[in-house]
Length: 309
Image (cartoon, rainbow, N blue to C red; front, side, top):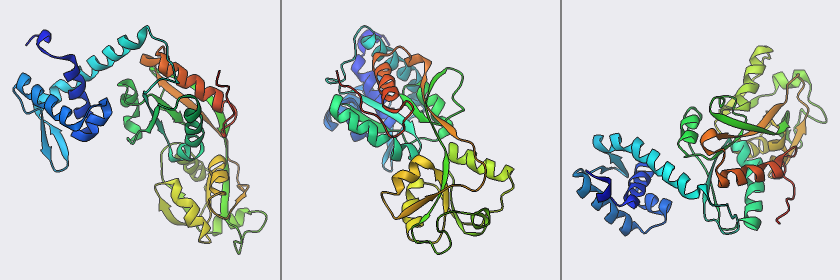
């Protein structure tokens, strides 16, 4: 088979279906209609004489032949896109690009609203997407361009990655206003005796749990949840307490009647950084977004006003 016999747009079609495993989502990804995507898949099937993707339940699963094609086609698409953008500047006010972030749910609460507010003013046609992947898959996803920037405490991103420290955060305890046992301060005895809500999640919160274990603090854990966004309701409607990052606690205090207390044990602060893969270090769009994040958050997680000129 000769490359001259293949419309290069079909490679983007294949890559989109392989990533999304859904015809409609794949069509949205590359900006075509669902019938056009179906027609393109039919052309690919004729060219390769293989079904390529077979519907299984709600997903389109790749055939063994398609699995072998996936990585070479993905790399080819990334190289072509990079080459096409290489000599062009990035115009945020005109761009329709989708930027894909990876962040913890704390980042979604603290940083994402600031980013979205700024984009609405300076880059209204840009789409922001937060990737839903496992943290152990992050390095591969960023190397392949599936995630543009990781924003948060991700110490595992070292080789092949750049990073920039944006700000530091610390930990506080939270309890509902009017808690029967916690008034103006939280004592060590209360910290150990009052039942806790614990969030089992990746990143800085996991580091906090390691510190607690090292200090041999004997807490009473009443419930464990996978997401921080459950905390405002749980804490606001119960006599439980939790230890969480300060910036998240400040945001939660606007959502429920929650009070913040100093943690009665020694806890170090931690850094929030932006991370990007070396493949995209000189990419104009990636550079612009990194510079924007630095202007927004450097030293201040709540964001600062950035000039638009």
